[in-house]
Length: 354
Image (cartoon, rainbow, N blue to C red; front, side, top):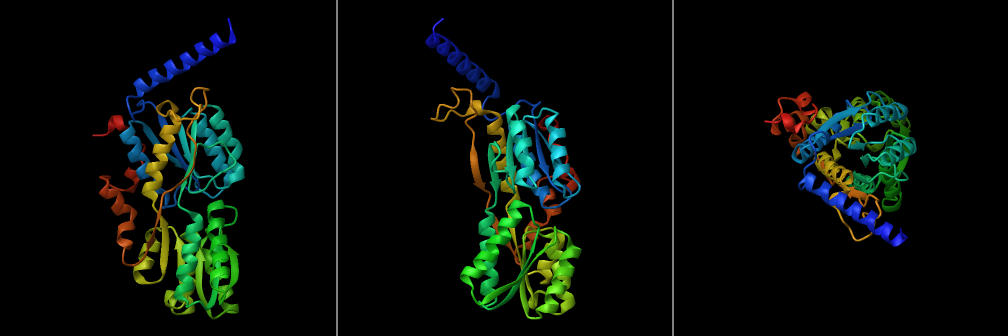
């Protein structure tokens, strides 16, 4: 048999198989047995709840099962263990928030090699073979916070940052904040950059310590919500609260929303979790069903997955006292028809939906 004939037979077989699979999918509908998992670090953090709610909603519309899993503590090795446990179940797809890019390169590459679709969200592992990455623009978040605080301080004064070192998206936010302050507000000095690892008590202590050295401290930026709770407590004890020390964080939870409404936190930059979860699931589904896409690049014909979305920006919102009421998770769960947040985080199974 000639090589040309062999190539023709293989190509025809591939295209026929693709067409048959496409017919089975019947548009954007998966098989009810397909399982898709959202894996995040520190699963009890409130930020992830609406991400999964939208992930689950998209999965319900696509006719597939969805699950919310993760670790109970901030530990890259333990999150990798969870990833491996899920991979052993042979899922159709995994959307994962990697604590560090390096820790997840090999696990993601291994999953993709086994035919499992993988999309990262909120933080990335860019050197891996993941099929897509969806997040808010972390550079934009850091720049936005710097300009907001810089303007509020009138271009003069002292600021500090609290940091969660090693988590790529958090580092980008803080690094960008510092860079923007130095470039655009030369009259503002960054007097400290303290690690807190999302621990409110460490944030509280750090702010008190820095404020003793710099009693004219005017603002604090941190890349997440937990540290803001400790920083706010310190600002209140120092006198004046956020009226004296402006606090801007990224992400919100119930406590931060309450603090925004009472004026104890100046503002919070919140990624649109619903967009993150919904479009994350859509991207994951398409990566799991490459037969639905036939781009002009020859990948499909050669048996390669044509789905590669290097970056999707899910957008962000500045949360203040004026719009804080829209961001309470329990209200969001009820608006979606769930009885409570626990019900919202239950596995998605369209076959059981009313």
